[in-house]
Image (cartoon, rainbow, N blue to C red; front, side):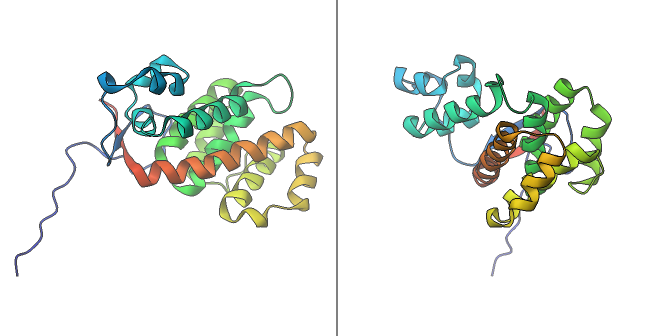
Length: 200
């Protein structure tokens, strides 16, 4: 019986959580940029996403991609009320850290650090995990995000009460829930379709 020899990937695969810019490589062939139709491009919402293999892969189902992208944009960019952008990104980063999605954690930790200016706290989340002490407000956001990610039904009134005691109103609590729930789904999609790679 012939021995199977596994060939290591030709790219570097990050093994630690980081705020560095990473690449993402699909295991399923995405559409080529030249293959994108007007319907595909409309579903991308942002023309620049045509450069991303992840979004070109999701463009194989343009209706799902458009719904996904509009949901993402509303959760993270519609900041007229509710949670500040930095803490929406924190919920996504904590969820991604808990789920083991190095790529998503890098993106959202970078945004959270940029908008909050709390670089050391964000780095502590990446280095120590979701049990890191980030101060009560951030601890409450992380705990709620993790509960939703582990088993959604484990999120309950105690998490809501803790968020309220930390100063979040109902709209802000809804933003924590939406950011964590969206990335709980998005992490699993990304982890099943490809892998992160060191940029370069």
